[in-house]
Image 1: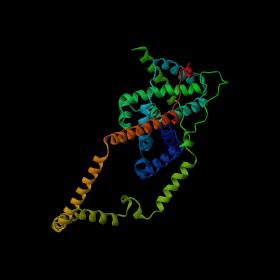
Image 2: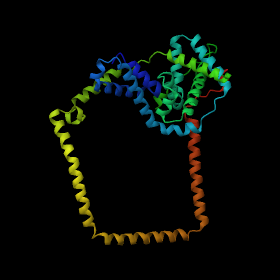
Image 3: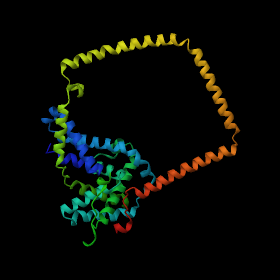
Image 4: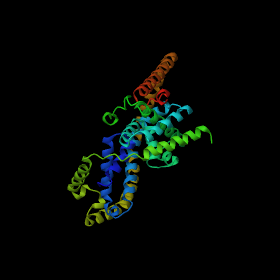
Length: 185
Length: 159
């Protein structure tokens, strides 16, 4: 369990942006693993199995709460303009080249956690879980076009949040405040 | 490939690289203890409160066999009960007719009341209800747009 708990927790917390919920989901994942212990003990694929179960349980958890936010998220979707792409790419370029690993890690996780669910979830599934667009659309029950748009807007929004936190600016600019989403919900 | 596609592709590549390089987040120290505690709590449960797959074979096999026998028995019994119920219900059908007449007269009275209300009042009531509904929906939508934690990524922040 110790070998995989960070991976399972990371999978859940990046999708939920809520450490308390991620901990509950991680516990459920390991309880299920215990039920399948005989099969998993000798398996080379135990890590993959745990990651898949963590992803599925987290998505099930999010789906139960998703109907609340989906309607309004679609009503209030903004257009992403072409001229926003290049500055966003420049921000990520700066993140990669100028920030120390620890600082980068903290800023990126905070920015990711502050994205709205409808942008963060497909973005995480695409970049971390390496799911194709169509699989994400099927899994979330939304259109392929919406998945692509949400991921695109998520990237630009993340760049905006990183820029707000002072990336690419003089070092006296304030950094991103600590994420409080988990504490709020 | 258009310039937009090129920039989009570059953005995708950069974001992918940034996210892939992120280290795993450390799980809470209490997670292991929580899991072990839950396993211990489950182990303390009596066998009959756990899943049937974990029941002793000496109990599980008779239960499954009993269920298998029960299915045709319940089917036969329900058919017999249905036939019996039809014959028994033939008598009270007359009282049901009386109840239907009462319901019909209630409907007639309601229709008369509605007809006696001026049409302008009915139309006004419908419009008022629709307006209230639309106002409430708009209020919730505006509240959502103000309170929902959406990132603000004005161009000024990107440049």
